[in-house]
Length: 385
Ligand code: MG
Image (cartoon, rainbow, N blue to C red; front, top):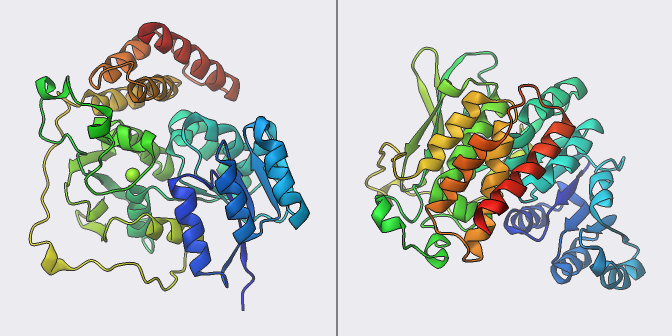
């Protein structure tokens, strides 16, 4: 019997984190939980730790340290707090795989530290690759670290590529559901509310990614994520709207043949594959039934209405620190939209203005990413508030 894989979950109380723990609890003979971390949800972190008995936990918000410590230290679980603890916990010798389920830019530093420590990564935090894809993929290569995608589209591409060795990819086709506002025009979108935007037709996800899905920014970020994960050029990444979310993405090889990966939309599948690659574990998740889906349909994305997708391709084309600008501006815009401070369409305006205003850095260092992120947030906030 093989040894259990020791997993650290960064962001265990979010949507991906809780689903990862669900996968682990179905396969306790294959995995054990080594580390759990959360930013603010102390109550859930404590409950998860009591159930899964990790070696250590980190609570990001230092004000909650005492509460978490009082509950878990008596159980022999180490408790740490703060941003630095989050970044250094990933270096623990006993960790085999770091699953990064943090939201947004906050994932960059701990991911870099994990790669530097030689840990394989199961990556759900797409913003990390959007911001620092060049740096992270270069580091991963140096350290011999594998990055297994959890994002369903990227997992699909990864699964299509298994067994293809060095066969050349002509292009990849990322599928997008189109979100709750598919088919709407600008006039319709001026008055949509956050409640409407938070209702995704096919997937249950965290608030940030759900808003990004409604605005197509999620697909834009995924285009950039795919570029780095699979070493592609921008013109090798195509986006097609597929409202049923059954085909999770496709790869077209240089002979013209296309491979697709299908299944019901359930994030536990890509989470599990990222943790078990190259093996598959038996799962009892609901099965896809062709007879229940008489038609799988496809259409071109409307980038006139949903400008974020075009802005993301533009940022990717310019490269350097521009994807970092795109991401930071979008994070500020989404937060403002969720706080009713910004309209749905104005989110793209903020991103576009930040891309135009920020200084271009062709070959950013880690410090350049940090300052680009900071400065973009200041500009975006000045534009909104
Ligand atoms: Mg996705």
